Length: 400
Image (tube, rainbow, N blue to C red):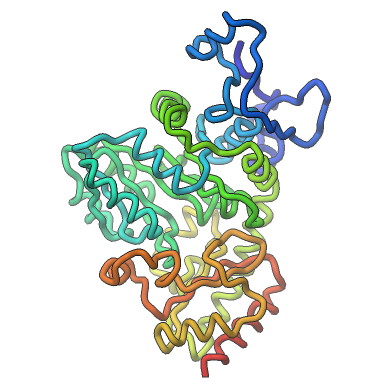
């Protein structure tokens, strides 16, 4: 027995795969994918159960490491990313935890961008107590990545764009550095999603996702995933899942599965609004600097346009005058934006990274990553952009 696949013709576009990839319908003929809320699965006899638990026969056994709804989400996301395999996890951070546990051991070395999400930095630093050392380098300086390589380097890890300064790395160049040194390249694709960027096609080996963000798209559930070669996922990641249980619940998987159906249209619409907002912010006297890859002034604008399907994404960060007090006053005076550190929602969110997403880092680490006290991050949703501009104008005026 093998778990069947959907009977789809070859060469389908991403928008079609986002709606159709998964598992075949059940005998009931449902049009919307079924939600399998079960912890375990029944076997016809003891001998079959023994074969399935021994991995001699492919089947669903226990939802900690396999469930039809989760498999549908994994297959759909893999198809969008252009990878042959995917494994869902309980959160984006558990996906990174699984990445380390599956691929690394004591004595191994990691090279990571110093501009990645604050929790990612903390997690990699924590693994030092298990003998896994991490060197942090400038996101956009390929020479620094190359210089940091060692004989025991096994993994390069980057976000592109980064949270919150939207720095863009040259994925193809980093893949060359990694592979020349016998290492793997993993790219966190949270900000772009496969609707805008497919790191595997640029040479990355593994793609990390926080499904909590744009894959869900409406701020409903926490989820994560690792996409990569099916052989690597099965050999290295599935055993960790069976033992450690960073499992994605079927319900959360179903929400993400349905979110993927509208991913492309949401990313295009939210990116267009973000570009309009970024251009408007550049003109505001209370704003010192705007970070957005879609702006020609962004240091990696040309690279971003080449890697991200000509879009800048939906996240805009900017520095206001007045440092922390100015940022807090701006945020507190808004009336439409949601004050929360989450992003990827249809509702526009606003946050102060230095005290939220990067609050657990030292001030020296924040400065190295460019996270200043005057920095504000806005994840643009689907509201009328004129209303968001007016809300931020009210916030900027509220500083005085």
